[in-house]
Length: 211
View 1 (cartoon, rainbow, N blue to C red):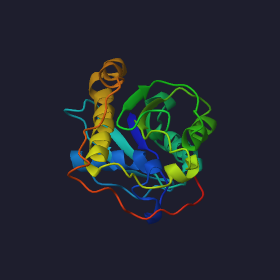
View 2 (view 1 turned 135 degrees about the vertical axis):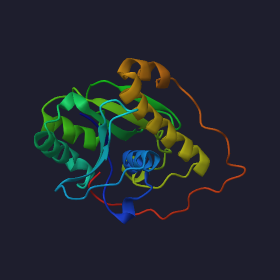
View 3 (view 1 turned 45 degrees about the horizontal axis):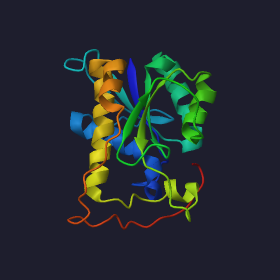
View 4 (view 1 turned 120 degrees about the vertical axis):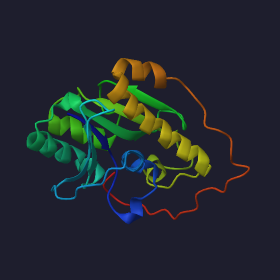
């Protein structure tokens, strides 16, 4: 069974940060598909999307552990539900992709992402899908750690568009297959310029561990 896994750090102080892009995408999918989260599992929350228009159905997954322990949640879920590594679609932020763009990747290394690194270690393979949410590089005077743990400062409508793109990419993988989804989404696109009509995100930033 396919599992769309959104990576992030649990807790209110990490909400709406760039590093929680994966969380935001699966939460958006749960709302769009009208499914609710089951909190009975030890390491993750799961929402079941039934079959029908989506084919065989699939799971939405939100790990309850910190980013650098994400792999433990997926390994536990893999054993409990008999899910193979290649059935996971891992959604995460990526600084090497321009803000506003989304990339689908079939496998490969972690690229320095702690969550992906943990998953590779715990599953013992790089053979799982990734949907990468482009957050762009930090300004020269900002450390990467601080950047990913800070809220988006782009126009809210541009952030919404980015998260919608990532959610669409996940659904296209499930409905169209990986290759067709890659052909549709792996292109450079810029977000709409709506800064003149929207205020930026002014939520406070708190640095913390677990990235």
